[in-house]
Image (cartoon, rainbow, N blue to C red; front, top):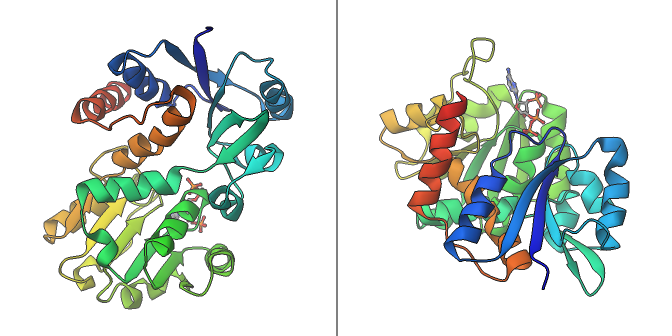
Length: 281
Ligand code: ATR
């Protein structure tokens, strides 16, 4: 049997850590497969999907990253409910001759919290800072895990409002100045922005001291691993979870689809990625 090959595609794609993750698992489980990064220009992406579905690329499926996630969703023959609500897919596979699409970012977010902050779903109120592409899967997942009040706070109010409209009655949109009020007694705080990462992007007051005493604070940014938001939260004695676990866990369902084995996110794998990130800094 020909060896199974999967891909990650984006434009650019060189920064992707997915090959390290999947090759680690291929080796760990002694699976005779491969995983390659393939850069595809936006203008060529539809043809790439067409060739994939027709079995002409040699790949059995793969991961999709920026800027192809929306196109992957649109052009798949079948998209599951998660991808359909998000309007974006990060994982593709072939099934019964059809190109199938899902989105595992939300799964990665939840599995990371399950591992690092067990019991996080007991919360009812969440505050999500940011309304970009990355915040969508977070909002969806927090809602699907039983949070009944989800405040999306964003510099550009209009973007937060669009997401509140999309994700239903539990989601409320706010401009940045509302942060002080909505963090009051909240159980979960998620940063999905690059705020605090550079001099041009100073961190505004977050009022994390107003969160519930047992609140969980997490960041989906993982470079650096300890972001300014997490540092603030730790200093206040709050539970914190870094964003690298989300990247690792979101990879697991795809690996299982392509290679038939549910892989484990190990401390060794996390250390490998941390090493790689440190080398690039
Ligand atoms: P991604 O798809 O990775 O989430 P994005 O769509 O560029 O990236 O979104 C980045 C998020 O960070 C947005 O919520 C953005 O706010 P706007 O919607 O107002 O642009 C937020 N963000 C980035 N820089 C910011 C800054 N200096 N102040 C406040 N918010 C900022």
